[in-house]
Amino acid sequence: MRPQVICLMMTSPDGSLHPSRWTTSPDGTRSDWSSLYEKVHAEHAANAWMVGRVTMAEISKATAHPPSQTLDVKRPAYFARPGASSFAIALDPGGKLHFSNDELYGDHVEVLLGSNVPDSHLAELSSDGVSYIVSDTQDIDVGVMLELLHAELGITRILLEGGANINGSLMAAGLVDELSLIVAPALEARNGSDRVIAFGTEGLAGKVELSLLSCDPLGHGAVHLRYSIRQN
Ligand SMILES: NC(=O)c1ccc[n+]([C@@H]2O[C@H](COP(=O)([O-])OP(=O)(O)OC[C@H]3O[C@@H](n4cnc5c(N)ncnc54)[C@H](OP(=O)(O)O)[C@@H]3O)[C@@H](O)[C@H]2O)c1
Image: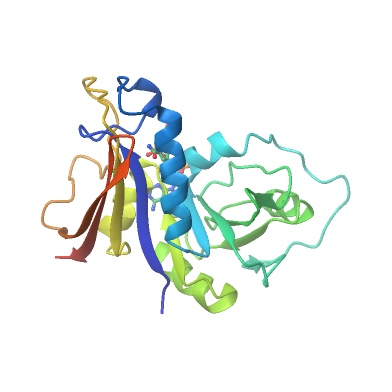
């Protein structure tokens, strides 16, 4: 059994991933829309959030800091705080992310890694109190990881919060149950710019179907759209 996965993103009507490039609006500001996003995040009552490596690198800006003494490294998993009430999960196949402590926004950090990650990186994570699971393969089998997160840590609902590539690949794999979109009254409209969901050149046609669950105004000109997602 895997946790429920809800993809929660803030976007513009043209699907932009980058609020810093948006037009302004008389209805509200980026800060107003970010506050609405945080409110919806809390209302979903998930006990974990998950992001891709690129997005996590913008959140945790720590650099490599190998521990000074040799540590016994645990594989395939190290759970530093199995009883934590909420988790911040990063998908980092290459072991490129670093952390300065074991929490982000009050949530315990859990990193999902590819099989080639060296022991030195695992030693750094465990000395920082960060939990991890190393996949059997270099390309992480996210479905298997989700089942482990449920079984080992009691994670029942995960908010998948970007970026575009992680959102798209998990949707293509049939691992996302709902899309929860905050649409702000703004536009980016640059040629070739990133959209909130991306799945290579193939796209998602023929892979998933969306069905509207609800559409609610949130204030400051923003609306909250919720869609259930079914794999084709
Ligand atoms: N508007 C919003 O609400 C919002 C929210 C979140 C993020 N963002 C923006 O999104 C941008 C980053 O998005 P992104 O799409 O470039 O990166 P991303 O989805 O954050 O990260 C993609 C990376 O995650 C790793 N990964 C692990 N398993 C994967 C899998 N199954 N499928 C895909 N990737 C996997 C890969 O790391 P390796 O390359 O190391 O292999 C991959 O390159 C940032 O600019 C951020 O600011 C916006």
